[in-house]
Image (cartoon, rainbow, N blue to C red; front, top):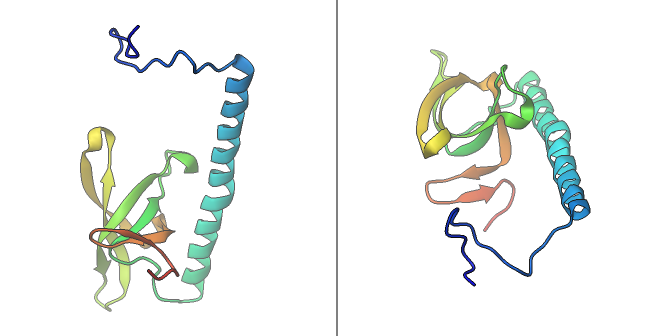
Length: 138
């Protein structure tokens, strides 16, 4: 017997079976993790960003940073991830926005300009070849 289904190309493991209860438990766990990520992590990022903006701290967004892009039409859990390509500065030299690269369906990427108020940096930033956790040194 082949371990690959010839119709769908899927791998078939005869020893791997999940009962409906196990599958339901796994789905509930995944739903809880996603809810916590959306309701706790993303809100904390937003609050951190707003707090730093109010205290006139330097911008938290830098070239190469990975961030979440605010989208009014989508719930927070569906906001897209992007990488900062460049900063857009005003005539006074203060960064007001950023040019970001967002991947869309089919791994096509597009470049957008967004104000800093709509960008929420994650605790990681990416250089040219790698991604580093902020505050950690390699």
